[in-house]
Length: 498
Image (cartoon, rainbow, N blue to C red; front, side):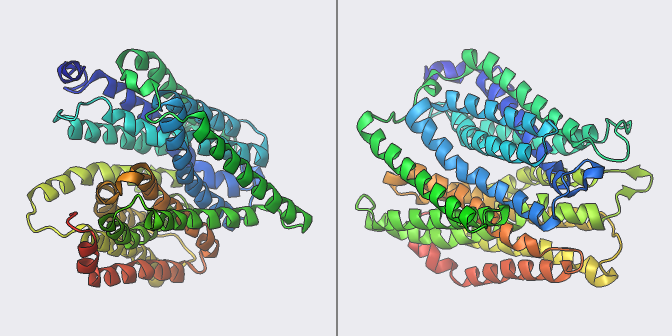
């Protein structure tokens, strides 16, 4: 079987199955980033303009907690794949849920459809996202040297879908350039395009998957037996019962509202990684050296959470700045505020080969903690830059779009120092008994960062944009500088891991 994999070069020298996963993830990211590009505007635009008429701060909090929930759900999605369905079935079910989530948003059923859509897309993305990547690895034998280049092509597909969507979906919502929908936007047409994108992804996955994907993906890696399943069911029921009781108490006190639900999710997103750290540090399965490495991971986890709180704000705070404070034309070329969402994947595609070459040729490069420290400083500087137009020109008018372009470019430099390095170091520092759980921790850092974001974005407005950007940016820079002084200590705790 390994020999067959090595001989399969049908997709630009890579296994034919990579094409299946490449386009599946490309279309999934198209649907997700397309939806995300216009969702904030849909929530807070007035009903007369095609929106839901929500309070802006509430809409911003929902956007942030939405992202947090997506990464929380990857923990469950990974478990379902490993223990119950296998990756191929889990990915398909996830894709179907995502498609129906976009369909719910494409229907004019108001706030109810919004919450149904969020639930479906959160569950679906949690199932699809971690397991597609795992299936890419399954296309190669351990000796196959094409693995790294294959993953690079796969990541390019992710960013290609994410880069195209913020142009295509707003274009559909704006009447395909023909202003068919009067003075307001037809957001539902945009969400329909996202649903169609996910449909194409599922079609590609279903037709090609049977022929070109590994048979191993049909089965769970560690199938759960009845004895092990029983406590999982019991604890799931207990957890749901506690949640029902909490929601019931809030309802009885007249406090069952979206703000308090966001607060509950925030607590869960922060408490879950704390629980994981305590569990690993107290487990008898973890050796003394492994516990040292887990301790080394804690400051890196906190740094990652701070970084993601800023980086993921592109669809929230920077989206608001684009809509309300940015000149939406360059000369005679006019564009939509949602189009700025393309900058994230675009800069990733541009910067990735630069940093790959840098790490390959830089002999005295910093250790992982040093790179994290620099990443935090860059993230903070991206926000400091966004404070400057308000300081120079006031916060009442509109400013050049190049402020946003510059901010995104700086934060993506930070991402190059944090994201791939974090993925690598997470696998290296993981205790043998908690390999999968440690990988979940990387996703939980993003979840925790966005959960905190859900609380602080409430304070963003045009009037206080300068102190907001300065405060958040300085927190990131200060933590990055503090981390510099502990680089040697953290590296020592890593015990030989670079």
